[in-house]
Image (cartoon, rainbow, N blue to C red; front, top):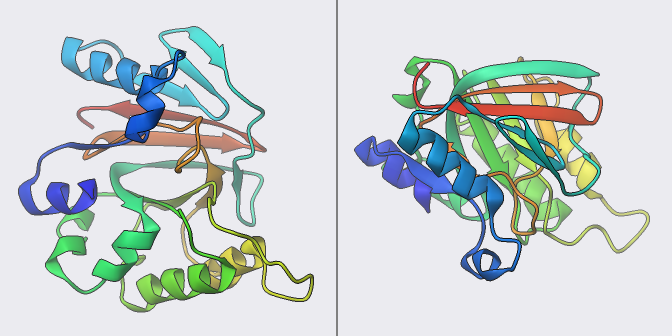
Length: 211
């Protein structure tokens, strides 16, 4: 879990591809480009939903599904922090997921669901909201869900779970971003200053070392 290390130590940590994805012939272009950008002082890396851009060179991956709940577009800017919702939700109330100091400046919290079904997803997000983890953010970004959807047509589904848990938040909530346990996925640097712009189903994320 990268986020607790960033919160406790102030170190930058990476949330990206699973280890077995790095061995593919295609490789993890987003991760390599981000690290090269930060190491060499190149211009901020822009990553688009469904494709990766490295200084103007696109790599098409799949049609974007990114959207903003209750809005057609949004712009979110702040310090990135987040990770897997399955694990971070269990740390609610502990020093390992205490966002209070991190929120001294605008913060973007990103979360991705690995295995939880809609009902458990609703419980996890509601728990974070009741505990104050979702207060005072510049924005919230949810990745594509890797968990099962409702098997019964009359049961709670993934979309309804999100809308029920997150309705009424006073900042933009982007969902179905390229974050998760299934490629393609953004490589996100906890502690980086980020700007996410979403219009319709298209989105571009920019990450840089400093504000």
